[in-house]
Image 1 (cartoon, rainbow, N blue to C red):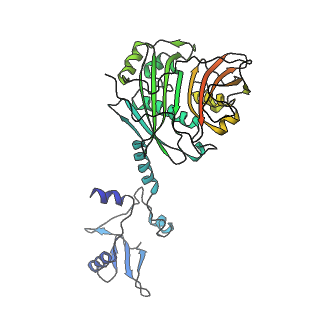
Image 2 (cartoon, helix red, strand yellow; image 1 turned 30 degrees about the vertical axis):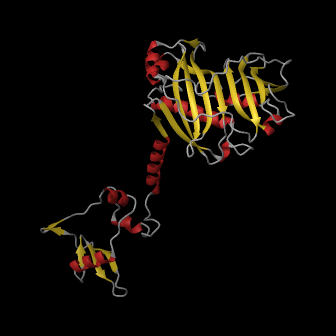
Image 3 (tube, rainbow, N blue to C red; image 1 turned 60 degrees about the horizontal axis):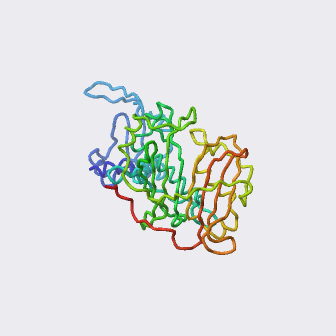
Length: 396
C-alpha cells in the first residue's frame, strides 16, 4: 500500500476500459443525470457528450441543492476553458521526485564515522576543476579540505554565526586562523573521479587545534592526499591572537581525537627570502572581492595560488607538486598589494628530471611577510610520494 500510495503521488491512475464499461452498465444505457450533468451516447460516434443542465438543479430527498464552487477546484466555466487532457499535461511533477532524490543524495555524501569523531564527505571532480595536465589542481584539493572542515563543525553543532566559529567563540568575537599547513599529494584525481575526504581534529598544545585530512578514491580506496594543519584563535575586532576560553574549550574538546598527525611534521626551518636571494619574483598581486571570505580577509586557498605564481614555468611543465609546507604569518585584506618570491633549491635543477625543492615567500610590497612556504616537485608520472591506507585510530 505504501508503494502504491507513493507511486500514485507521481503517476495519475486512470480507469481501464473494462471498469468504464461496467460503470456504464450500472448507470444504464439511457441519459443519466449526475448532479446536473447529463451524459448520453452520441448518435454519430457513440462517444459521451457532456452538457450542463441549468434547468434542472439536483435534488436530494426532494430538496433543491445549490452547487457552489469549491476553493481549489475550477468552476464549470473555468473548466471549459482548460486545455484538453493530453499525455503531456498528465505527466507527473518531476520536480518533487528530483527534490526527494537530491535530499537523499546529499544525506549520503556527508556522514559522521568512527565514534562520531571523523567527518566524511564525497566530491566529484568537475571539468572546470582540472588543469592542463587533466588532473585536479592543488587549489581544488585545498578547497575540498576547507569545505569538509566547515561542514564538520556544522554537523557537530558547533557552527555559530561566524564562519567555522562555535557559539562561545561568537560571543567573544573569536575566529579560527590557520598558522601552519602541510600537504602531501600521492596522486592527483582526474575528471569524473569521486574523492572521499575524511577529517578530524585533535589538540595542539594548550591553545591550538590540529586538523587532519585523508583524501582517497571513493571507488578503489587508494589514498590520494594527506594533510595536517594547526589552528589558533584570533579576535576578529583587534586582530590579535587569543587563548582558548574555558567555555569554548568545553565546546570543542569532546570532539577531539587522540591521534598522531597524518603527516609527519617537517621541522626544518622555512627560509625567509628577499630580493637578493629570490630567483623569481612576481609583483603587483592584488586580491579580488571574490577572494575574501566572510571574515573579510583573503581566503587561505588564494595564498597557495599566489605562491605558485612565481614558480618557474619549466618546473610546472615537467614536474608536479607533491608536497607543500606553509607558515601563515599574517593576513591581508582587499586593498593589499603583494609580491611572490621563489628560489629553487634542494636536489635537482631545471636541467634534470630529479625531485626539485623550492622556497617561497608571499609578502606585501612594503615588506611585511604573509606566508613562508616550501614545495617539493616530482617528475610527472613518477611513483607516489608516500603511502597510507586508513584513517588513524585513536592513540591509547
